[in-house]
Length: 251
Image (cartoon, rainbow, N blue to C red):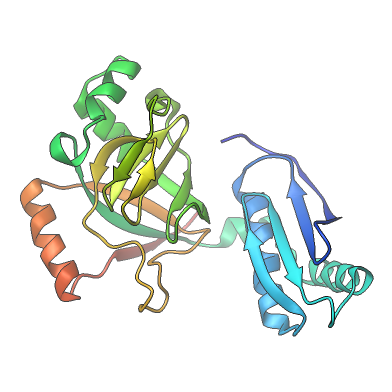
């Protein structure tokens, strides 16, 4: 993750039916807050020309219906919203963190690359676990697969390159490290991140409301648990009785 300079928002044409609003030139919480503030404002506006919104670390893509709007009209619409809804630094500072706790069984059958991460860092596996679970990670965006959280704030001491040859199948719930990022695979899929643990918690349920237990702007805290705890929680998840614990904490 790199810090960015918050810039005057730029609205750029993206293809024939979309605009991109850029808020910065890197990645940081304030820039990301502005992205999601604008996305929320667009949704509240109920503009019938809007087809889809795609937020990222530092920008928002707005796709619209060419039969209902034009580049000029949509640009004016977005500029008006930006002027009205941009978050101030004070708003950001005073908003309490929503922290979601995810239980994780680290190493062994749950995280086959934990030893490699420890060797690369020159520390023990217990130290890797302590470092990884000792940070509250901001959810910057969801992508790659439904419910996959791109998390910011990982300690660079455990930053580790991706594996040389991506795996054909990474188990659902796998917690991985790739360079300076960490994340969780919500479903079984190919992937090249270093696997250090696994959570039995389901990160994507299309029948749930919302389908993902946390949203961008919130935080994830990984809580180490035993294999026995993992099996118990997995049973609760299967029965529909498990709820991810969430707490609020002042910034």
